[in-house]
Image 1: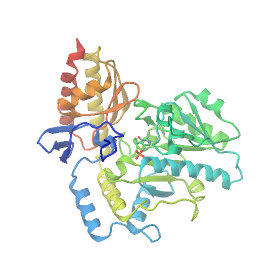
Image 2: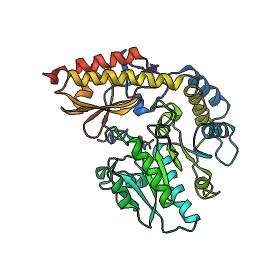
Image 3: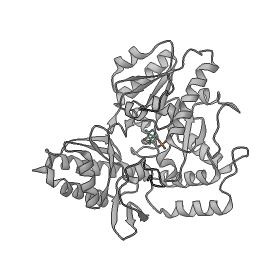
Image 4: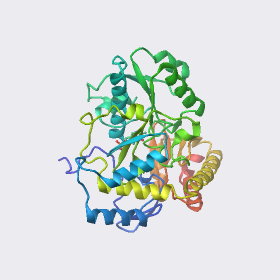
Length: 390
Ligand SMILES: *Cc1c(COP(=O)(O)O)cnc(C)c1O
């Protein structure tokens, strides 16, 4: 008989009861160093006092009112995101897929509203993951995720990452814009080159089409800047955020320049929960922490330290790992034995990690992780991979 909880996930038998910082405990008292952070989502770790207190305080006042009314918490969070980004306006929703759907709709609407109705197609990349709704499955490149769920919406063209000629060849009079992850998380922790991102910006400008960034995983400090696009010195026209923005509380956002945002007029798009008082209170509390002076510099230093340790793991175990991938605190170890076996061995030794495509072991610790905890993670990987090392 099918379990009451739909078994669409392969779940480890680890019922966690509580956490603190980068650590999680099971009901029976086992302790784990959490380098998955709920898939790069528990950005300021577990049970962060300011986030806990803010959520409790807001929940006791009002949780939800709907977008029929003004929501001061949402107005404040939107203004703070606008102040710290390329964007002029923000739409709130509840997940990464919903943020990407909003971004895609905004891009198409901009073309339709400016007399370019034929420009509906969006160029995406091989290895891309944008979510599990029908639209974002179509934008993603993994055909297995679409299998049996068709027809999915059309209008997406996929080209290889970091290949400008392929991008230029794919642009037609029907192209609306380009959507790219600065670092593909699910796709194998594959980085879009800085130069590639700069050239994407230039080609969008040249053709008058839109650049959309999926920063659901790379945004909100994960790479050591608030947004990964800052490393390239470019600005997108529109950007999707989720994961770390709520510190584990479901929250997503679409950030956009006025020229794009202004076309989502009343009645064109919506979300019942999106940006409710509780979610936005959580978002403001997370932003308080991430935007505190020195916080992102510390993320950058910790990330460098972790990367150095992982490079040494690769050097010491050439039969197990081929390379370190990614940037900031979104790192991957490309593996030779099945990644899942190493992931399980690490979990047995007390370290939680994530899978990624291309047989990559993905590490996304909370941004508050310490260098000492990184050292412990490196030691654990080193000893856990010993059976494959000989
Ligand atoms: C996780 C992820 C998504 C999907 O987010 P959900 O909250 O699961 O809908 C989309 N894009 C990227 C880059 C992601 O990492």
